[in-house]
Length: 335
Ligand SMILES: [Mn+2]
Figure 1 (tube, rainbow, N blue to C red):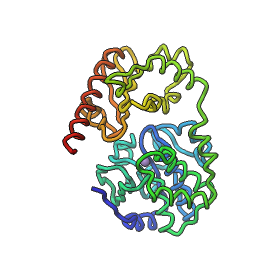
Figure 2 (figure 1 turned 30 degrees about the vertical axis):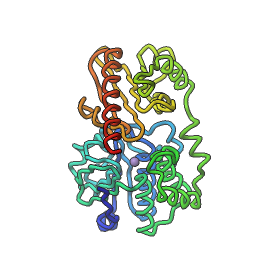
Figure 3 (figure 1 turned 180 degrees about the vertical axis):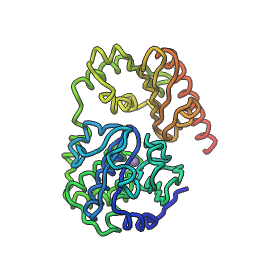
Figure 4 (figure 1 turned 120 degrees about the vertical axis):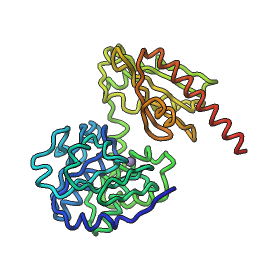
């Protein structure tokens, strides 16, 4: 069920507090980075002190965003934390552990803003709206509510959030609400062409070389409905690619017309692999990931497996084929 709460529970702590730490989840994506930077800018405009603190670095494609160079990165707290701060604001963290900073944040009041299903309402104030197309859209609503005007840099951060989470307005969350929000951000000075370039045309050469290697390993099973591919350590060596260069590679197998579920298997070390799963439609890959000790969303999830990449591929093909068969059975029984 969709829970829609107004931002009201947050207004009092936001107005009363003077100094805030803003954080988001591990491996921050465009929504996490864009929303954090935008909220920091808005709070400063509102006369507050705001420091963004992320466990993991801001990915290169978002480093053009205003304020990204002022993000405090790592598990060590920024100077003066927690004593000099009134509260922390967690964005996009269904549980506080998703921030990677759970222990440190235990020392301070936390305000929780999220749009994920299953948010654990761990804050002293919680605003969770699972119908929001991106967390950025909720920050935009908050700005309106607090009557803080959007400058072009803040609008740009928020449009990055929205474009990222909707996959460039292609995913099912590309609602009228998403387009309304985007129109307002463009009116406030955000430039979609610039953002597209950062998000979709800023790959490194090594990333494309790695893609070439990965595509060489592509296999289709289950009448072309299951696609699997490998990223071995040799591929990283040959292409000169790093972890950051793998961003978005898993989407390529899914772009084949017949493919409904994808498993990308990346060698971590001699001991094991990391599996990234993607699916279309109602095929639930989160179930598979959870059963294997991982997690994620219905259409995007991941987990780790011990053993070789070849063994992992056999397991992944079997799991995805079973998930598709289950999906087929549900569809036929639903008529
Ligand atoms: Mn999001």
